[in-house]
Structures are given as structure tokens and as C-alpha cells.
Amino acid sequence: MSNFKLSENFLWGGAIAANQAEGAFREGGRGLSNIDMIPHGTQRMSVKLGNVSHPVLQADAYYPSHSGIDFYHHYKEDIAMLAELGLKVFRTSISWSRLYPNGDEEIPNPEGIAFYRGLFSECRKYDIEPLVTLCHFDTPMGLVETYGSWRSRKTLTCFLRYAETCFREFSGLVKYWLTFNEINIVLHSPFSGAGIAFQDGENRNQVIYQSAHHMLLASAMATRLAHQYDPANQVGCMLAGGSFYPYSCNPEDVWESVKKEQENLFFIDVQARGHYPSYARKMFEEKQVQLEMEDGDLDILKTTVDFISFSYYASRCVAADMNDKTANEGNVVRSVKNPYLQTSQWGWAIDPLGLRITMNQLYDRYQKPLFLVENGLGAKDEVKPDGSIDDDYRIDYLKKHVEAMKLAVEDGVDLMGYIVWSCIDLVSASTGEMSKRYGFIHVDKADDGSGTYKRSKKKSFYWYQKVIESNGENL
Ligand code: BGP
Image (cartoon, rainbow, N blue to C red; front, top):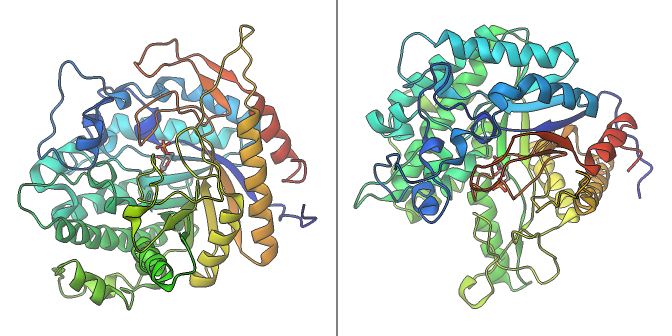
């Protein structure tokens, strides 16, 4: 156990995302987003991965994002509870289609702006700093259908209009921004990650990396705009983190882990360093990708982010021959089972030391402040007859990860803050379930959508309250 003390202005936080929490999918003038098209159940994966070329809403399917946890109507009550929890920072995202219902309008929807003004003002009322992601997996369906989402530069133009609206309208209320949540997830889950639905016969790598090029341009241009609007604005990129371990010390396995690490960090390399990495040429050649660029694109990419944010749930493990190993099921990033690690009920490896490793590696590579904006345990909770929830397993997971995080800071990593996913139960991004719960606050809603949406505090709520109060001393 470390005696090291975190700085007094360390940002302890909790996170949610619009698409998993707000619900009210057709209220306040909001348009449909890609996530609204992803059903719960057997069809989920094919839509999510982009294998359905033109997803449409089916009358007999259940779509968890349509109701979320109804944060849209509960936000005042929720923020009051988060203030009681002691949060210094609250991470959420803006639903793009609430501001631009189709995505390509000239003028934003005033009701959408009013909603987020209300939300961010509510945070400020309690001295909670909002950390806002512009695009947490949701892209307006209008842009998906009309332009093929990020494969078109038209989407980049629309995104910049949207980003500028956010910087203008929420100026003075928000100063910490993230451009794209887990930008590298576009490789693994293209439709949920970036609204990319494949058409027959396409070179999928070409589509993904061309779209990524547009997203990287969008991120750099939005960063520049944010700084122009207000020099106090700080903008980060966001990585689905977790180092890739080699399965063994066989150099073939080690080389595989180097390649996977590069593939994973490719996007952040551009956002943090301002240019395509040295390994990009060979990687594109192998994947038969030929990027279309316009004059000036490489200059645009030179605007880099202020900080590197990342999520950490688990480390990954890879081998040269993945086929003769047991796969680590349940995670969108392909990984083999690490024989040294236990897994969660959803098969995600539990590896607190992996957090220290990941943080050291990221900081060594980029030398920019890090911000851990998602860490937590998805688990089934039991509500006892008296209404209490004893989630000691969640406390145990978080305690070990906070300890590892503190050790990494002691190692010399510059870390702005630690944010738990999620402060309130919400819809799982991967499975669409409610029963994969992460929160300190329980929400009475089941996988089929039934429930009262009533909020109640779990045991972990009181634990995290003490952690924040003691600035990470009382674990
Ligand atoms: C990250 C996403 C979040 C969140 C989290 C937990 O990938 O940024 O949106 O959902 O993972 O994953 P899941 O909900 O699939 O358990």
C-alpha cells in the first residue's frame, strides 16, 4: 500500500453517456442516432458490427437506448445524488442528434441546447465540473443514411458545425472536452462506434481507415476551435485502453503484441503527436488501404490534444497463433484467456496491475497528462428485501484499481483524475443489458425494459464518498 498523496485538485469523478442514459429518444426535437437502431437480443451483434447494410427499426424489437435510464427526465435528482456522493467531475456526452436531429441542418435545435444548458448549470450549482464528450458512439442516422457516416467528408463538415455550437453555447459552463469516445473501437465495432454499416463487396479496412482519417481531422479541427473559443478549454482524445500482453516470451508472441499495440494506439498516436505514425505505411499496405487526402490534411493533423484520456477495464493478451488458445469471450477486442487472471461475470479479465502498466506505457509514449475517464466493474447486483445492495465485489475491484492508479502516479505519471464507469446504472454498450451494472446508484429497470426507474444507493456509494472525501487515502 502506497503512502503517496494525490494532489489536492485531483479530479474524482463518475461517468455516463447520453446514448446509454438519456432515453427520451424522440423528445425535445431529437432525431434518431445509430445507437437507436441497435436492438437487444439476437440481432444486436450483426447491427452493431455493421453487417446490416441499412438498419431500420423493427416493430417487434426492443431498443434499450430509447428509454435508457430516463436521465433526460431524472437529471436533477441524479445530479443531486452525485453531489452527495462528492463528485468533483461528472463525465457525460452530448447526443449529437438532440442538437442536430438529422445532422446536416444549418441551425441547431433550441430545445436540445436548453436541455444541456440546464444539465451543465445543474452540475455547476453543486461545483461539479462537467467533462463532456462530443461523440460518445452516437452519430445522427440522417448522416448515416445520406452520407454513409464518417466515410464522407460531409460528415466532418457537419461535425464541426455541431462542435462549434457546443463550444459557443456551453462556453463558461464546460471547459473539459473529449472529441471521440474510444476512437479505436471503430476497428472492432464499426456501426456502434462510428455509424459505419458495410455494403456488399467493400474493402472493410479501407472504409474504416478512411472514416478514421475524417474523424482524426474532425478531432484536430475541433480542438483548434475549442482553443479559439476559449483558451481555458482543454481537449482530450480518448482511448479504449489496456495493454496487449504477449501470451508467452516466444518472440513470435511478443511481435504479435507489438503489432496489436500499434493497431490500438494508432489513433492516439495521431491525436497526440500530430502526424501519422511511422508504422502506418506498412500497416496500410498490409490491409490494402489507400487513404484519400486533400491538400492541407496533414497540416490540420498537427493540432494535438491537451491530454490523453482513456478507459481501463482489463488488459489484453495475444499470441501469434490465437486459434490454439482459449479465447477471452465477452470482450469486443479479440484476446486470449490470460491464465494468471480471474475474470468478471462477463468474462473481462481483472487486472489492477495492468492499469499501472498501461498508465506507465501511455505516459512514457506521449508525455502529456493522462486522464482515466472510465474504470469499473459490470456485475449482477442483488436487491435485498429491505432494498439494500451489498456490492462488496465492486468495492474490491475499485479499491484495487485505485491503489494501482496511485502507484502509477507515484511512478511519475501525470494524472488529472480518476472517473468511475458508471456512477449510475445504465444500459451496457456491448450487450444492451441493464443487468450488467456498474453504478454506485441502482436503477430499477430490467433487461426487457420493465421497472420503475427508481434510484437507490448501493454500499459502494458510501465507500466512494469516503474515498473522495479523503482524496484517495481512505480505501
Ligand atoms: C466502454 C464505453 C462505455 C461503457 C463501457 C462498459 O467501452 O465507452 O460506453 O459502456 O465500455 O462497457 P459495457 O457497457 O459494454 O459493459
